[in-house]
Length: 154
Image (cartoon, rainbow, N blue to C red; front, side, top):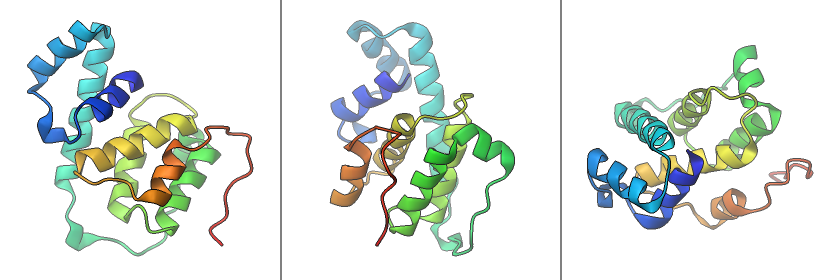
């Protein structure tokens, strides 16, 4: 599924450049992607679009986000740390953070790898028509070595 998401990001510079879902599924199949993966990817993207369109920017929170045990278990400490890093650096808003968490939990995979989480963040920004700034781009496409020391904000 993530190969398809990366393909969409690289092929369609913005989401409104994508064809309708049925035509997109045919194009992805013609490129060689598996039908099951195509369905999973399009369903996941549909969920992302629904979440992103339901967000009201006027209701942004400035409070502290506490993760429940199930979220920490599913996301993993590296993913939670990366999300917190992006938010504290001002690269993700509170509503974007919640969308990233929800879409990561929708994967039905535990723990979510840091590489997959980075693709989720990238797809969220892509779906909102935003380009990652230089710092975020470096973090999203930098080393996926999960054993590397975490970066500090200062």
